Length: 244
Image 1 (cartoon, rainbow, N blue to C red):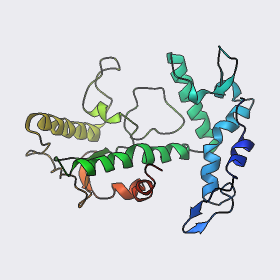
Image 2: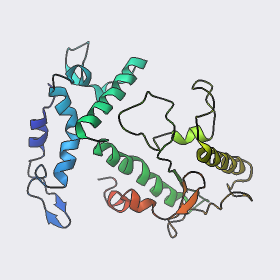
Image 3: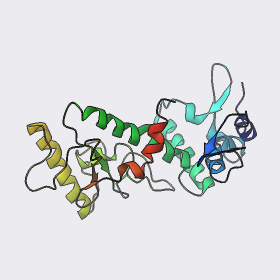
Image 4: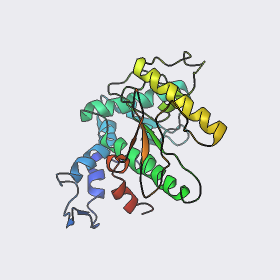
């Protein structure tokens, strides 16, 4: 089976499925003014594979079968594999004029909202403290610079808690980030010792409950409670479709 083309990607969505947007049925998701944008972003990988300028980067060949497949499905085995994956993501961002929308959707649907649901379920049985790193300029020490900002990427919070002897030691923070890192270390240390992150000298971190829906936003230099996590990540929508 060969690689799917962008045209096949579009046609596969015209299969009679029932899709509704703002309470109205959508006749064709590929031409819808909102859903069509998501369709185009999701299909950028197919476009890159068809583009002679990007084909060598976007397409891999299975050495056993000779079958071609997207590099996104290649399990990285070497440093070069990881760098090419990063380069492919950057290429998709350049073609789209910004970070891929599908990646933002994945952040909300696969990480943020499931974590919030888990916090809510656990809070019925044990004390829970939920947080989100909210530093748009978190240092990126794991991969080379890219054409778009990484923001508060997955696992960036580890930099604020631990130095990495394999990645240059202490992260290159500015003064505000140093202040945030110091507070986060205090929270983690206090939690390990006392079972609660709170102590004198740091902002109060309220327990998470479904009633209050309050998380701690770790924004430099001083973290603060927020009730906007659900709205920021469209959790009402994703929770309604969880498991479907």
